[in-house]
Length: 144
Image 1: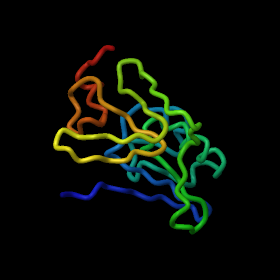
Image 2 (image 1 turned 90 degrees about the vertical axis):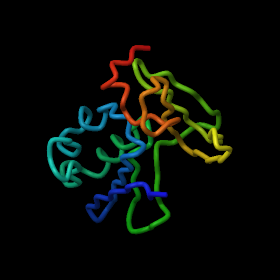
Image 3 (image 1 turned 120 degrees about the vertical axis):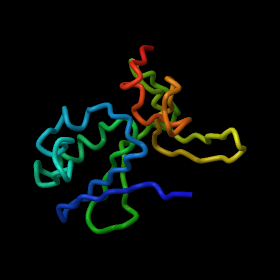
Image 4 (image 1 turned 180 degrees about the vertical axis):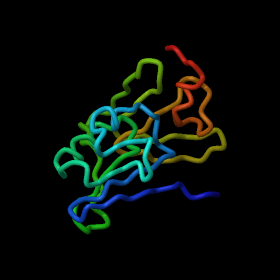
């Protein structure tokens, strides 16, 4: 079993955490804060491109939870966008189902995974990370 990739970008005040396996390529990050999130550059996150408050707000707008942050040095202080107590499912135009809240995903092999905060579920059938979205809907031309 491979371990998911986790990238960290720190400015000393906050650390942005990116989990590419969760990314649905909604492009909200780089359209919302292009001085920080630029997929044409390496590294693609320029943690000094904006102040901490602006970066925090943009990370909280990530629909899949691929981006999160931690404040200060506290290793367990990872934060994603706040979720109300109800679990909600949002249909993204031509994209995945965004589930916000705590759910248990039961896979075909019987294993169960607890998903907290949010996750993106594939509805196009093209994901290489089923049942989770990996952004393949864009390449597949999914309309729905």
